[in-house]
Length: 422
Image (cartoon, rainbow, N blue to C red; front, side, top):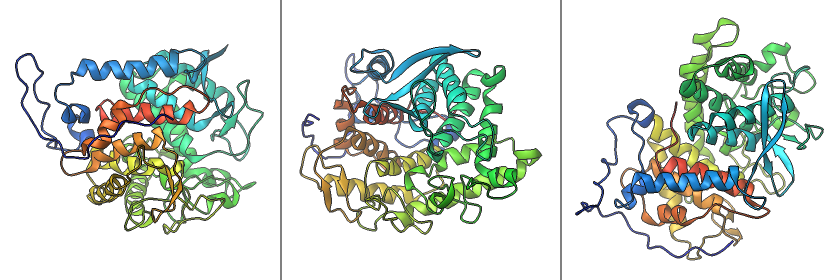
């Protein structure tokens, strides 16, 4: 990737607009957390008050045009043959030439946040048609990896895909209302929530290795809900901002609404504590994989801070911005951003041991994006360097645009105040 111009690391100095300049944005702290108050900070305008909402929205539209409507060197969204349920489309992992539940769920979330209902429905149709297990012990889960023509490349479900899909569907119901069949978003979301929480209840125990996506013993999301891969977690899969929403919206399996909502609330609290025990006490870096007690899971290098782990700080920060239930998130973000502010390479390296030892000096737009989102948890103004770094990024092109592009787009939505808990 191209080097990003260095930006001074300094706190924002507030100045009033003059003449035709737009008014200074609202105060940084809302009277209540964002999901309660409905006020979502536009940190870009806190950083540069002269930016208009139109300018920020134009940047979001640029990302949409590039990643969802652009040419063969920029897009990740591809129309596919229609099904009996209507148009379909998939998000392509361009570098690996396959379709992943992670990317499909991110694409659905971006579409609902951007108010792109037709794209949302097309992605959901493809996922429901080609990725969902329709029978057997894994029924209701989604294949994490498929060929572009269907599945035929199945390995196992991956918990982050279901988490984002269920939440995107709930938000679609909140934003657009429910339709019929697979477009009854609330019913489809609740079917996924039920499978994630109650798979072992549904199957009468562990059958052919299929397990619940949330460990009944540890009340935590598992890495993969099959066999031994359900015996540890992935810190970047912990999404208490979403669990808190589920604790308010879940219908409950077999009429157990109160039971399930209480359990989702407990799981949210467990994840908030997990961020503290899985992050390094000096750097706040987390490993890709971790034991349920927070210790790194050293499996094929994933005990280090690698690509999955980019997202963990964004998760604890969005949760605190939305619900305000984890004051330690501010400490963690401060510790993490202080670590990155002391990296003198521009852009800073992307892969580390959790103690901060550099593994790979190549920078990553995906990490830059997630670190900008991490500023949402801070008590006070966002350090300018991290907001400027995200603003200066452009929608990626080329072979590896899939992961970076989706993280950049999600980061832009969060930092601009356009990622909302519908």
